[in-house]
Length: 219
Ligand code: DX5
Ligand code: ZN
Image (cartoon, rainbow, N blue to C red; front, side):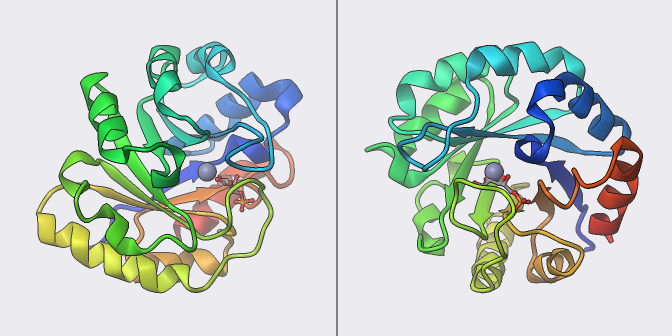
């Protein structure tokens, strides 16, 4: 069955001083999800935004807000991100002592739950939580910054996870994040990814270019 490829522009690469406008622009340009990178300067060496800013951005698009939490501890803030308007909340297993509990909490909040695997985190980290998740995120760079190069070993991990997801018979997004370009997107899709996060490759040129940038990644 052909994959339903979705593109999730990462607003990390957008103009933070004009974020509402940038989100409206990628929405109109054909984005499927709006990928929001939340960083705490602790779990990752960079800082971005938190729930109050997401709440202000929320009215600018009706598309799925795909919120990637790179913060630790993550549990005390899950409710606030849900209230701010996140549709998907994705956590890293390293970001709390009990990732199963974090995922349970996200589901209890009525949100879609994602688990994110760093480049060195093995695919089998999902084995005992697959029944709880709606999305598996494969990091193809080390988290913290946009504009890094795709780490090729992510492709084997995507293949492994595609088989695990298919074996469940459930609908679970297989998302890849980091270094996605016109060159790496087809490789990630061939390996089995069906949601592509892209920051730099989408927010290049002016808003008029965003539609072309997104269409190019979709293939
Ligand atoms: C990195 C973030 C990514 C990043 C991707 O920690 O999770 O979402 O914004 O940026 P590009 O597409 O430029 O690699
Ligand atoms: Zn991300």
